[in-house]
Structures are given as structure tokens and as C-alpha cells.
Image (cartoon, rainbow, N blue to C red; front, side, top):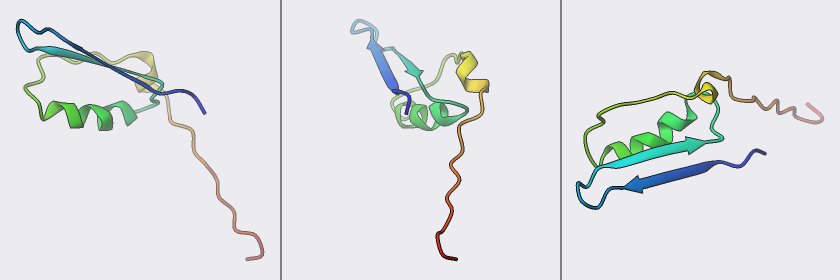
Length: 65
């Protein structure tokens, strides 16, 4: 499984912060960002190429059924 990384850089003078996610495919990064959006107003948003990739799916098969 690919490593997921969340980086939060805070400007102590202004209180503004920048959130960067890495390793999240599709809109999974948006789910992480929602937690931090409660801290203030979102001024801008930039999507990386990972945002437009489809997350991997897992097929689960039941044995004996």
C-alpha cells in the first residue's frame, strides 16, 4: 500500500496555513482536508494529478458461498 502523507505548514505571524496531501488517489484528499477546513476559511485550492486518478478497488470474494 502506498504511503499517505499530510503536511501542514503554519505561518505563525498570520495564523494562515497550507495543507498538502500526498498518496491519496481521487477525492480521498478532500475527505482529509474537510477536517482542517473547520479551522478557517479556504482561500484557494489546487489539485495535483493524483486527485484525478481513480482509487484502487478491492474485490472481496466469499469462500464457500
